[in-house]
Image (cartoon, rainbow, N blue to C red; front, top):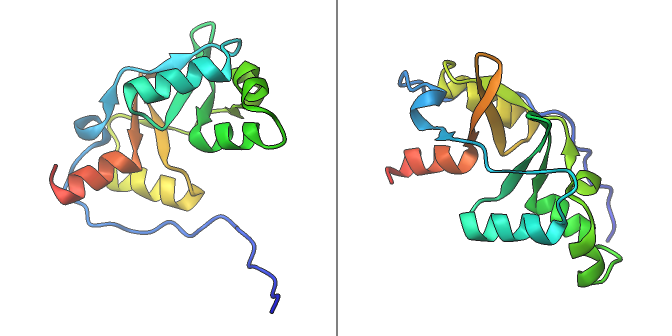
Length: 145
């Protein structure tokens, strides 16, 4: 039986319990980054070595995109492993960066991520990228790790 699948539209942001935690209390400080000209192979090594799921693409001190695990999987489609590893981060990245300020409530950041169906936000302080908050961080907080 074949039936059409529902489209993926922007989800309604959910409300989560707010205990007063701010993004800065849970975020990972520092940006693990690559340059647009770095190869997918280099970016994959960063992800594996740092045990992370995405790398921020920085160009001239400015965050210009993100390479996620999904971007890497999609880059491999129709290519050999060697061809995919040789591609440039700038060619496979998701352009732009969703951001939030370090001083907002964690519940607001979760609402932003769920509403946009995203897994992470670049955290800014004084309009400069200083870290990352991810759903993995939120899950760790929920289970008390």
